[in-house]
Amino acid sequence: MIICVINEPKFEYDIHSLFKAFYPAEEVKVTAKCEETSGNASVFSVLYEKAYFSLSDGNGKELLRLSTDGVKDRIGEKNLVKRLVYLAISRLTGKTLEWGDLTGIRPTKIASKLLNEGKSDEEILSYMKDTYLVGDKKAGLSLDIAKREREILRPLRLKQGGYSLYIGIPFCPTTCLYCSFTSNPIGAWRSRIDDFLNALEKEIRFVAEARKNGILDSIYIGGGTPTSLEAPEIDRLLTVIEENFDLSGVLEYTVEAGRPDSITVDKLKVLKKHGVTRISVNPQTMNADTLKLIGRHHTPGDFVRAFSLARESGFDNINTDIILGLPGESEREVQNTVDELVRLRPDSLTVHSLAVKRASALSEWILKNGYDTMVNTDKTMEIAAAGALALNMKPYYLYRQKNMAGNFENTGYAREGAYGIYNILIMEELESIAALGPGSVSKVLTREGKLVRDDNVKDVSLYIERIDEMIERKRELFALE
Ligand code: SF4
Image 1 (cartoon, rainbow, N blue to C red):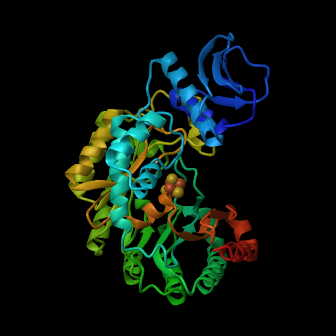
Image 2: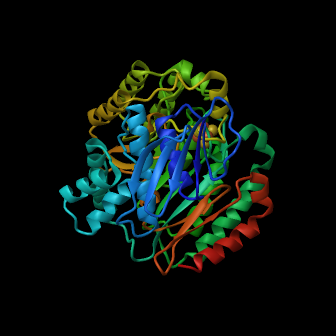
Image 3: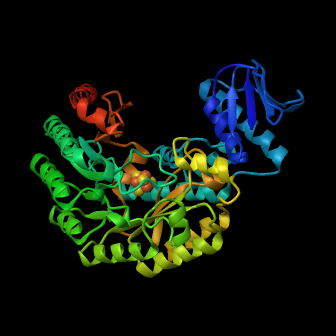
């Protein structure tokens, strides 16, 4: 365990993220209180003084001190403490991090902002490297993606009341080991699906009425796994959407059909009938043993069958998600997964680096089995990137999460014309998103240009019971626009 004691309670999140990036297998605690520590803990301390910030080890030996000269505001202070922790721990461990001391989840936003300010490529790359100590490769990737995003978003009516709709369906066939989403095994909820759909319909009708003067740019039905619902239930949901929203200007209509074990011909027909343009069918890995270990009750063969069914049903924009850093997987397994996908030729490929979330069963699993078998390296990232290139895909969106295997990132690759617009919008926070269903998060851009969010309750029973309260909260949220 690593304990970092700070003399003032600020920037805990950033300090925690950096320690975690250097010591992924360790539990990290950042605290303003000096507590009793167990014999096994490595203790550090950060001192915020007026003239300098410093970081010391458990023996009180100062590892690094940085002057506060030129620091004008809280952002400057935050950047200074991140630099302090990064440089001190980098020297101590001999490790460097490709993303430098960046702790935010949206690094491409930095490049986008500078592009909008008219900065040149050189200026942007230097800024990322000098300010955040980002390596050449990641700085270049951020700039490349920021430029592509601008091109992709050009047709959107961001300034004319354009918005997106997200609907979360909180059910899956089973729960994956690493899951931290709002997901419940559908089998246990069968008897309450009608109640759930009744509540969701009420929310849909309210949102459609409240936003009747807006322009609906994109729809994303995720979760969970929406195709866990039966075909007539999906039909009912998509019919309500169709009847209440003007879909004539929708640029993209995505439904996650993520779990191959939830896909049938009937469900695909229903999606097609209602004009769904993009679906996601996810193997995560093409290695049978790993699939068993991570609690996905399907085989690689099931994925191939589901993917082929989707193609035969006429879907010409299919995304596939994979995860790098899964327990027991090394370069050989990742290469196998990528080779299989190259053979199937999906239209986009989203490459995730496994993120260990506190709420997931994976956290428990690591306590029992250790962290050693979860490896994500530059090489595995390169294997995935090479696969995307072989499919004529380019990276078009990117985000990071806390506790990611190898401290890397999640990258969306797509062939020309198959970019997921909603994915960019949610990352770049460029337009309002009305989000419905348990655990969903609505975000609106206020008249003052601020982003304000409102979370629906996660628990399905509470969502059903308190649907009127969810609606009232949305009414207040939308009034800020
Ligand atoms: S398919 Fe996704 S949402 Fe469902 S259990 Fe697995 S990780 Fe969670």
